[in-house]
Image 1 (cartoon, rainbow, N blue to C red):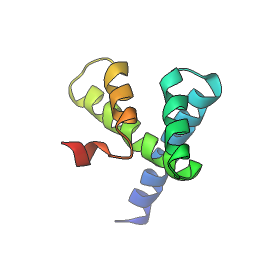
Image 2 (cartoon, rainbow, N blue to C red):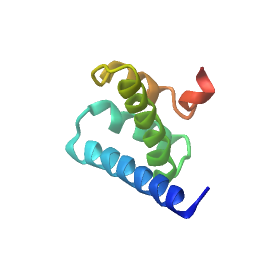
Image 3 (cartoon, one colour):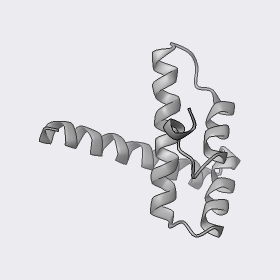
Image 4 (cartoon, helix red, strand yellow):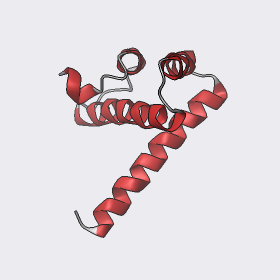
Length: 91
């Protein structure tokens, strides 16, 4: 991977993580906080939880773009509630 590709990947991860933090701060959608609480209770660190949530968000955005459809909040919630199992592990 070139340094530019790594920088792009890091930027995307940071952007997705910030989106998760914004959802938590806004309390919307509420299930994001519920999933954070659940994973915290079973021993995951906040940084690790946010990273896993970002993978789920990225998966939904990728499908949304590839299928040219609106964001599917129900699918996003299902993906988050399935954590720590990540989307590519469930398929």
